[in-house]
Amino acid sequence: MSSPLKQLSEEGVSIWLDDLSRHRLISGDLEDRIRAGEVVGVTTNPAIFHKALRDVSSYELQLRELAQLGIARADVLRILTCHDVRDACDLLRPVYESTDAQDGRVSIEVDPAWAHDTQRTVAEARLLWWLVDRPNAMIKIPATPAGLRAFTACLAEGISVNVTLIFSRERYREVIDAHLDGMEMAHANGHDLSKIASVASFFVSRVDTEVDRRLDAIDSGAARALRGHAAIANARLAYETFEQTLRDSRWAKLTQLGAQPQRPLWASTGVKDPTYDDTRYVIDLVAPATVNTVPEATLAAVADHGQVRGDRITGRYAEARDVIDELAGLGIDIEEVAGQLEREGILAFQEAWRELTADVAKALTEFAPQT
Image (cartoon, rainbow, N blue to C red; front, side, top):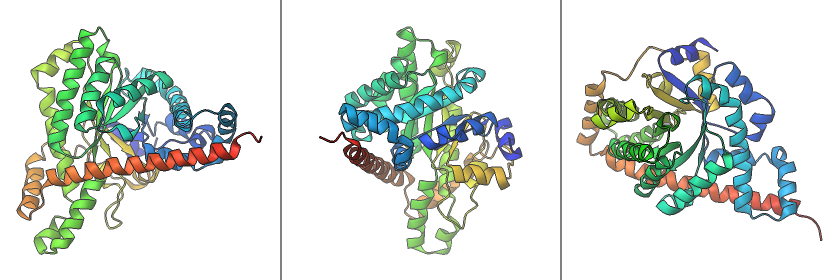
């Protein structure tokens, strides 16, 4: 393991790779990274699988076999993605066991078409949990109001969940409440709480991209001084909320029953603005009991030249609030920005899923038996 990645681990940061593909599995790339201690988990989303399945050659044998059987494209898509997630879970099983079920996790997302439908999200989550059939899997559910109800229901059934597309502190508080409700229900249902894990995926870089766009439109000295500060300030205040939750009496009772904390996960950590340091959304969000899910380019950048400077969140809450207040003074409401980004994120994942489904349908047609 390179020194910066080792330092992050020592600071309590778990690095999960935000990528998965059949090629990464069969080439041994993921296994090598796990053995080297570079990553201790994996996350996926519709866009990642869309990119992965564009490499049809890696999936050709399985696609040909499924085409022979005439299986519906939606089911083929589940078979292919769950196959990859299951294999990744097996590679990460030793990490899962050595970390008492905390790391070694692999996330797979429900069909984003159901982001506003609680019942269908729960049904999809159950199906994916059953298809992957590994204790270290996590089902990703978007943090919409309907998604949060599904999140609670899944926890109550013993399903581990990665709550995704969180952009605001207000929504994060709702995620925390849904987590507490679900874990209390899981205990009432007789589940072992120590085996049920959850992370709250708080998106980072997209906040700066949108806020910076609005600041550039204002084009004043005060606006320019705030460029690149919104996302980290927003994430730091989310971590303050996490710390407050750990002191909550409801959580204290769950801890006594063996429950694990729902760790904040920093997502969307690839830097979009080339003028910013390409490691900033990792290095400046170091704090104990956090996960950072990184794309390959960001992982390489951190390993190569990341300068870990210890905990960069705890105790910086007043500074973060000042940033949010100054943005509000310029007419930029971070909660309104978050609402826009949530809507855009869901639409982007829905479009990626549609394109992915179309690609699978095309491949099935090409490999269908000739009559």
